[in-house]
Figure: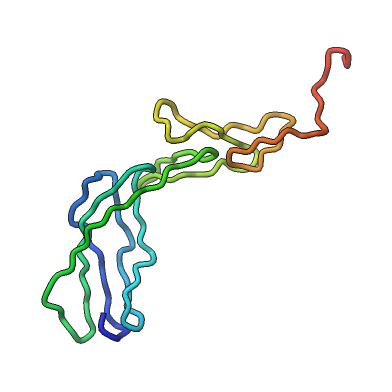
Length: 146
């Protein structure tokens, strides 16, 4: 991008094989001649592969290139892991870790059932995620205690 800090760049999605795929924040400002797309957000369902053809459009400060630049990219979207649940959001999906005092040991990528965070059982400590730790000092009431 020349050697300026005035040029601007934009990535535009031309085609996508994955219909559940959104690209956001695809603008960049040159810094010392380098365009860095650091705030790009890709929204897709966890565990998917998104293939896309992108066009790089650059507004140069004092230079106009003669050729368009195209990028063919493949994005491998990571799976959610145990201790997380898949949440549908306005623009896509996200993996959310179970909060403190809840847990989940189910595989969130199993589509057979909906995976939820469960409440921590009485007498256990749940720091969040997939961990459930029994309290060592807790004893269950016995029939003789009544």
